[in-house]
Length: 117
Image 1 (tube, helix red, strand yellow):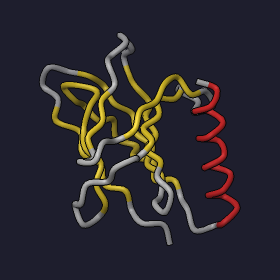
Image 2 (cartoon, rainbow, N blue to C red):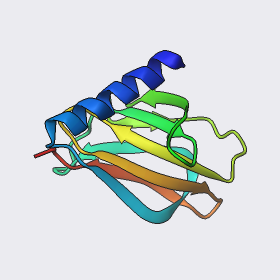
Image 3 (cartoon, rainbow, N blue to C red):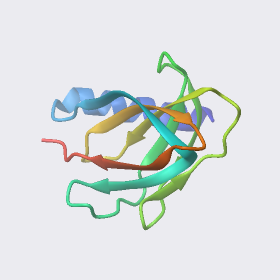
Image 4 (cartoon, one colour):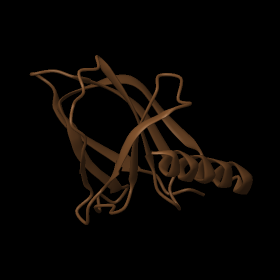
């Protein structure tokens, strides 16, 4: 767990140091049936090896993480929280930060990471 936090922190510091990276914050609460989805690039191509991190509401603590598979799919088991705070990180792309609420009427989660400039 500590390794993941250190790695995530390292990526954030590197992104800030090189200036071409930004964090995209999706402010609208996303409603989903499950804590799972797909990550693509802006051309709708699947992105493998995206780090998907659940963080504390203040964004300072890593709770758990996973990575996307070769088809950009990821999943985390629900833990009973009301709202999940997620961060999607991949080298060469801008990060995405989002809040997700699970609901029986929710949609499938799909996020597109913009290329860093």
